[in-house]
Image 1 (cartoon, protein in one colour):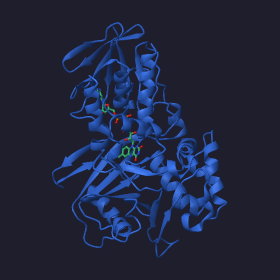
Image 2: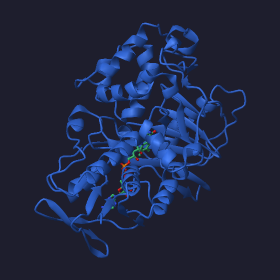
Image 3: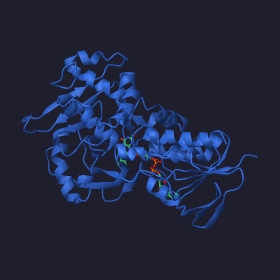
Image 4: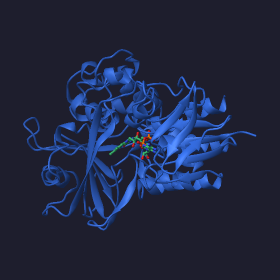
Length: 423
Ligand SMILES: Cc1cc2nc3c(=O)[nH]c(=O)nc-3n(C[C@H](O)[C@H](O)[C@H](O)COP(=O)(O)OP(=O)(O)OC[C@H]3O[C@@H](n4cnc5c(N)ncnc54)[C@H](O)[C@@H]3O)c2cc1C
């Protein structure tokens, strides 16, 4: 009889590993330290706002193949929202270069041939067709160049590529690795507009990506334990022999296996000698309790607006609230919540047309949202296979070839499951 696989961590990587293993007929036991699943992709009820909010806006693109396979597997693909055609509305807040501000919508064409770059109305204002060839060249970057070093400065960089790079890498463009961005470009933009449909949960991260996965795991016979922090691994020779949980030792028998799907700082604690990323970037989200009126706006179809030249970077319009993301936010993560909200509110007004006083808000600070996507940190990412015969690693920080994203986390879980299944 096949053994049990213990999955430690119920973030997206652990959920994805658990599903792949359960679907292959393995008995799965999931141990999650927190009171609920989701990790860095979670939702909760905020009593002060009277709303369910996400820890932060999460955007997928339709080219994120593993993420959509996962959504299909858990029966939640229909819970995602987004426009029927690829489009990315932007607002540039007034600054010395554009004193009056500007608005535009980038509209990639659906097919693989990028006809849209020949059509000024679909491009970033102030750019020429030739500028986009530089963008396409990003996909060939294989060395340690930063995004800033790989891009020609100009309106295309400032008004499109840098905002997308900061969102995808969660790292300033001066140090963010161009080749990780190139991997995203290869799997989305280079596949044509049909792979660039923006998608986000209609209701909440939990409702789309987490709760249905827990239900699917339970239906497949998995046992799921919350508030079950694994504090240590007992390692004998080249095998894990027990997990130390809150109720004592959980034996790992012959034929059993472990997937460690925890953040890198926890993995490094549990596995002495593990080389793993150890520098991180924050993401801030500010949730304002306000209803934006989409009538006649340029963002109604998309449901979000990119902000250039402000403090806010992406503004998502949600039921009962408007949610703002600031990535690569180490520079302001220790600022007072009131100051952060006050800095962001004028950008929100410019983006979605509010003009009143600032409403009630909640600032969510994710201090270690992702590893810093620099060359030095990327070299520290381990593969899923470890020196221990019955242990595999999963997590967005393992060597997926992608930045720390939902797509990377889900793929890492499948990779860890494949290793366990091949034993
Ligand atoms: C604010 C924010 C915005 C983001 N936006 C996007 C986006 O737009 N698009 C995108 O693709 N990605 C985005 N991401 C990244 C995405 O959320 C992550 O890549 C993904 O959630 C990581 O999943 P994971 O399973 O690798 O790690 P985690 O989510 O960190 O999961 C690890 C789990 O392990 C548990 N754990 C820790 N220690 C123990 C222990 N000792 N015992 C048992 N369990 C333990 C944790 O509680 C957690 O549940 C964003 C992240 C943040 C924070």
